[in-house]
Length: 130
Image 1 (tube, rainbow, N blue to C red):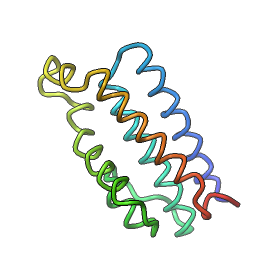
Image 2: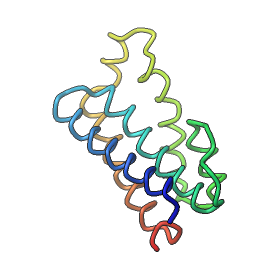
Image 3: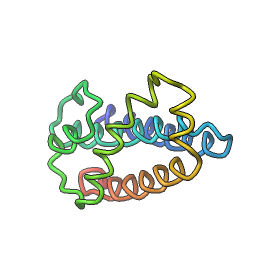
Image 4: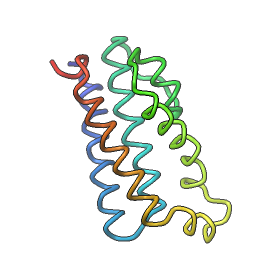
């Protein structure tokens, strides 16, 4: 496995664990932000490994899915699109009070659970299981 692939996987694991800590501490905006990062980095690992080239410089999960050659379930793809849309307002909220209201514990928990499900599926992909 490529060294950068291993690094992307480890960084994804770190971000997912950080998302869990943010959930337990009530920092729900960061849960969503870190879920996006965890999926982005794991997708970059797959792209790098599949192409034998460095991962592209993009934050777009759907673009990374397309470049990876993987075929996620429709519900996973829909969630990644939703997470893409949430990435900017959780990273750079134009109204922090509104963002905190919108991304509450229930929503953050749902995002984390769905992210964990997709991460498990991605990690079982043959390109990463060597």
